[in-house]
Image (cartoon, rainbow, N blue to C red; front, side, top):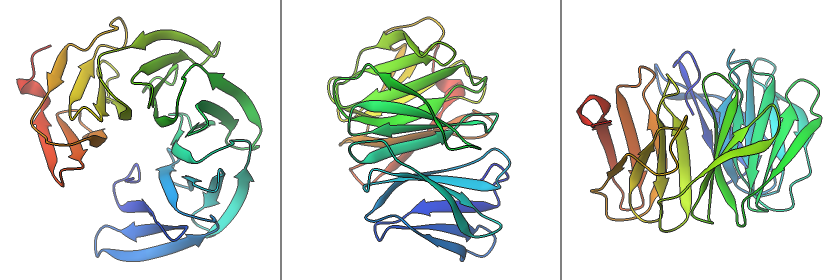
Length: 239
């Protein structure tokens, strides 16, 4: 994950550590050690002061980057934590787990705010909308759920992938949601209204493990198990 400033990069490691890298010289700035088992996901707070990580040890950990220390460990998931995300205002952390639930945490206090239940299999990815009102979640049950964060209820279920969905990402303006799945496709959705995709992007030969928009929203990257990354120009994709 890139920091909001773009100056540093955080990586989740198989050895249970989290590393922060200086993008100007590709040197490791900080190594954070605390997880017992591989780390699956990392995300920066909006102010870049904190990092959250989720691991195969079923925990979510919050790190103070300036102090290079663990702030707290959040427990409650019953299986691997596959994805973590900070809300745009930095006040809430979302975690997605192989236990089929999503948990929302108070980032400052570490308190569990709510557990979201709606998927029938492992949840692989979570993403906040830019306005912080909606959460998207992707699951092995082949669906994407959109959650109203004020009420904790499902707004709508997005269907179209024919296998597990591995990754979701909102465009910076919040008008598009991208998803990548085991069916080797990237799908684009109008999250405000649609339940089916408006575009399916094909071309990679294996599962799509990750999707991400550029900061300006002009580009979409998709990473695949076929060892390729494709860059899609959003301006050429018909809405």
